[in-house]
Length: 233
Ligand code: FPP
Image (cartoon, rainbow, N blue to C red):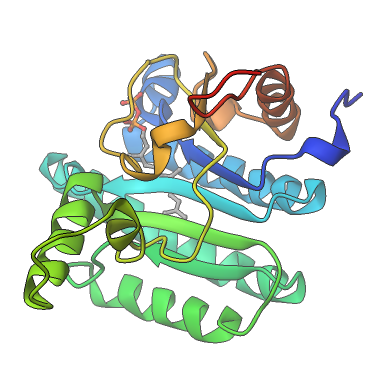
């Protein structure tokens, strides 16, 4: 049973979906099977985030540093993205979910780019949950690109909002809560700028074992935090 305060659901939740590889290894399976199980977990979390009233959900699916993984694992993740869109797009659209991509998709395989384009086109006018998929995403590259845009505009002096408004998340609130599964305590180049005041919740479960119930426990932990944003009570 959920013990959540429905008046204090985080508006923006970020998730570092870690542990797919370890989940697979423990079962004597290939890493890509861990990602496949992770894709199934993701389906359920998107639905629960939506029913709980989360407004922005940002998930880290592939980082700019993940290209060094074995080729079959990299191509396997992109195949899962294609499969995810094929299986879920209609329901996402029916639920008014707006899909958005954070990252540079230009080096992705053609079929993955086509799926992304279809998802963006189909859900572009939706007004419900904003579902950000970070793919070929890295926060340092994102910040550097924002700075380069400002240089190109001829700016000699900037304020923090100038950076914020040139990130992939321009116009969105910063994440209130960032969840990392798989038990490790780091951000791994995820939303570094936007995470300035995010509450971090680390869960021991590997991502494929991250059920909607565990998601609610993570939100419950967030609701127990005292957010001061540098001030005092
Ligand atoms: C991190 O676990 C996970 C990833 C790099 C991939 C995440 C991908 C999915 C959840 C499925 C794809 C779904 C879509 C929509 C693209 P890890 O491999 O680093 O795990 P480990 O730390 O145990 O090795």
